[in-house]
Length: 60
Image 1 (cartoon, helix red, strand yellow):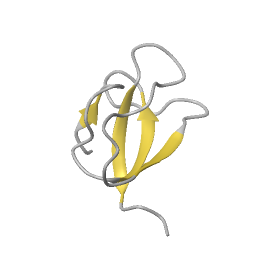
Image 2: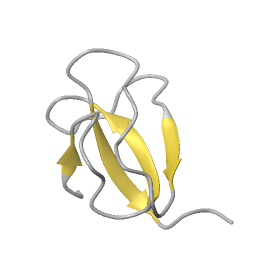
Image 3: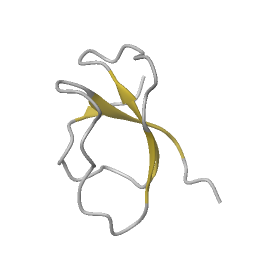
Image 4: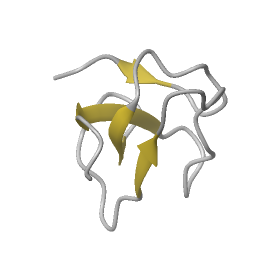
């Protein structure tokens, strides 16, 4: 499992991120976002206490 990051934090790297539970577990209907180089912070999650996990490089 990759490092979990909180919404609003500066992303460690660009790429695809998926929404996870507070301890990294799967959630139902997770949001998935693409973070591009130059993006300064991760977006809000659908529910409180969730975090973001990087799952791979940007999809082209």
